[in-house]
Length: 162
Length: 249
Ligand SMILES: Cc1cc2nc3c(=O)[nH]c(=O)nc-3n(C[C@H](O)[C@H](O)[C@H](O)COP(=O)(O)O)c2cc1C
Image (tube, rainbow over all chains, first blue to last red; front, side, top):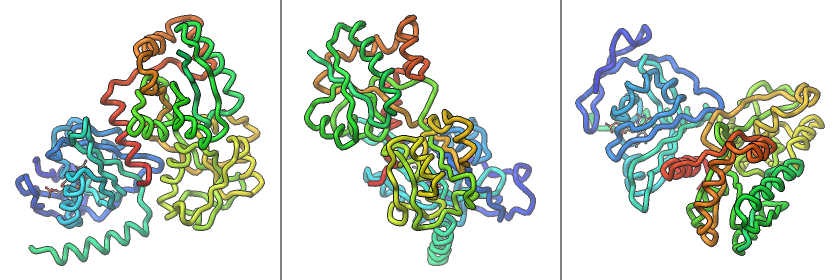
């Protein structure tokens, strides 16, 4: 996956090298600035069985800062924020691969280095009893739930082997 | 065979006349002896479905999900170019300026429409509100939901956006919207029961062509729709997947 680009991001970003599961490590630019979740919207995307983006709605495109062309065909980890511990995504993948629904709070990294929090529900797309892909629908989270998730993720990151 | 036809009880009594006319159109065009039945409540409707008394239904998305996935109903068509969206509003004079200022313990006025309640409750999540710390006061119609706000019987109200927008200026001036959903995928849909599946092609042809016929177009207009959209199977499945992310398990 393409590295994030210095000319795309807001001033004051920190650089990171993010290890990924099935991809080369990616250079990130990370800002402390949050973009508020738009009221009343659902942010929707789908992936194939490997987590490659096959669909995203307007709200997804808007909030991610990427164009639809830049998103389609890319791994969903294009939005991965370094503040989320690896175990959260392991849990997500194990749950949906088992045919079940996963729900959780996710901090996403935008193309411009800023971030946004979502409450995500990921479901397998079963067709004739067979999982053909996955869909995630995000909604606006409450601030207190975000604060709880933030604290938990900090703790899990600290415990995570380097 | 007699085709038992009904619509979701979320339609206001004044819109049922247009559905009667739709039923007459259906009878004339298909030669099927279709019978239009209305149910006062979701309880009555669900009992009728369980007794096999509903062949064709124009159902809300919430009911559609279980009718298709659990009861084997076949989706036929939904209104083209529109979707069911929700407005959360308060009384004009309410001190509440945003959803996040609504506090636990509040009473919410709503109709019994499960789509509207589902979307409404999702839009209250940012305020940490859910079924456990709110009370839903069910009203028979959207004007009655508006009335409970004006009388301060409820702190906030859930409205089908379409119904909210149809309110007169006099009513709108006494209300203030806090948030409007923009979901775009939740819609009513015609569903056909497994017992009546032999009529599927005939009904699909009729619905697909309805807006091209002068009298069909008039019937559609009365219902407030432009045409019927016949979704491909994958679109139906995808919509049901989306619904499944929104309803509690
Ligand atoms: C349908 C679906 C949606 C996903 N959405 C996101 C997302 O919004 N942000 C994110 O960081 N990861 C998301 N993931 C998880 C990523 O696939 C990936 O596991 C994660 O970004 C961590 O990267 P890694 O698995 O390479 O370590 C999603 C996965 C699926 C199946």
